[in-house]
Length: 211
Image (cartoon, rainbow, N blue to C red; front, top):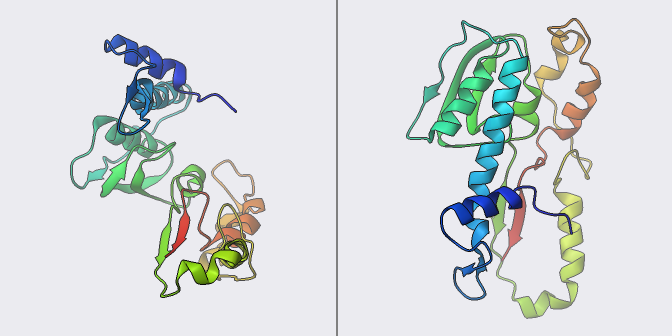
């Protein structure tokens, strides 16, 4: 099993707080105490990566400030400001459900002039949850659960791209921006992937539940 990339730092933070990282917390069997410090370790890593990126990438001194809806921690706001300081940003907003993302805050929306944010579109959105309550009793289908799950997987597109034959058209695929970018290189190779992925469940934490 691959080691958790944040485990070592989480253990250090846990020990620094005076808690044995291997002690158990929570109900039942619980979990190692260091697990409660994993998010803090991740936030530290994201902050370091942002600082390193800012030191090597040209920033836009005229970047607008984000509109912030609700209360958010300073790391989320800082991540949003960092994202908005690059490229031809017209405006940006952190919505009420915003929180720290991998590259751009989840719940953060940025509008660009003649540009597409690959990381903002490709990594931190498209998380979905769909629940369907049925009047069928489990005893009636217990021998067919595997088949039902497989059918759901063939019908609903989870992950990057599609597994079914449903296609969605949109005017954005007619734009000439696919043939040019800020650096003058064509970005048309991304056209087919974008068209193939539009309206799928995405590569976020999507799930379907049938009850």
